[in-house]
Image (cartoon, rainbow, N blue to C red):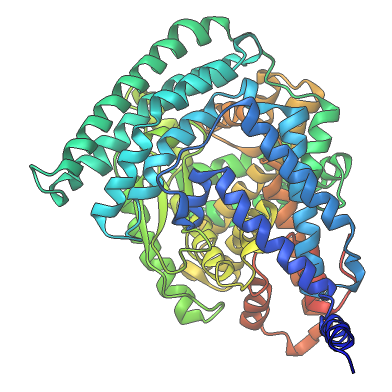
Length: 590
């Protein structure tokens, strides 16, 4: 046979031996590309996620950067559309649905909601987070991290200039401008509290130390100039409407929840559950008052009317409010309660407790002004690093009466529930499990509805399992905080889609959910600053509760609570509808 024929046969043989990638392999390659390239588009987010390849870079805030992000989302959506989802493995079907929702949400945010043009609070978090994400955890030697801090601080003048060029002052709502003014001041506190104490790690005469000090000086000047602009130009011109409107709210809510429930269904279930919780709080309130009053509290003849129920509940809450921290004692109180809750969860054996470290900290200033507390877990690529349960101190300019109002809300039992929610067995424990799920994509695209719903669900579960001996005072506060999540969902849609006023929202929160004035006032601010996020608590709670009841019905007498919890947490943090499908071999939702 002639040489050309041999060559032809060899080519045909090699061509036939090349295997086409399976659909799962195609999707996994696409997912890997998303994880890799999305980090490059958002370096600060990458640092928080534990991807430290871009620690020396700082996000671009420019039309070109937004175009790159939009083009990236569209290209992946097009490629994803060519992969037949029903033929993927069940795990990949879930991840594909999460990726599609995330990419569509990104395009909605970039091109329709356009918060980049009217929400300055997102930028204070970006600037403060640029340094905080490098200094909060010991993922690398301190000298290396300080060098990356210097890299980022040197880019602060460019960052703030781009922010000022991007924001459209006339579209900025006043509450967003006021919060940005406060948060921007806190950016410098990150340098004072986290960077300056570590300067000794760099030799006094070293070039790296001189560079860092120069970069810090440059950054302080840039932050100061931006502060002046916020106060003298942005704030006086901030005339935008904080309400995003019904149509936009519904679309954002659908992306946030990634579940079929509608705004109307949320409202209907919330209002029905509010009455149910009132009934339960009334019965618990009678028990508390019977124990507290020397001669008990007699019931009136006949069934109680609503006014009677509310009076009993308020009277019982007054008993609980007697025991509360002093100003400045919330953090040490939370530390004590975290140890107590951890001991109980381990002893009761109701869920597997990871050995990851957790620490309670004072909330960084650049993150204050939205909520009292949050859980800052390490990113999915920093598994095993420390989790921070951050608590905000009371503002220094509050009056004694405002302090009293706040501490009545965050009484001893309130801090107990807060600690269960944020740490044990709430966010800290759940996210420690989630970060161990093998799909990095799923960890990056975690569902806030799953996460917040779990933290709401475990509160009453702890009471039912005997925490603090099933103390009725604890149970009353747990139910009161369920009322908070219910009213969160009602005012969320009421404010942004229905024109609810401050007076109406305050009346709802104080009158029907028994919130103290300071708590309700803070939630009014938070509801203006955010949209759709406040609905995740109630919807997530409902779906976790339904999932538990379904599992109990399926298992009958063989139901094992710890096995159920560990199974639920074994899938990462996708929306609960996907967990249900994976647990019970049901079709994966689209």
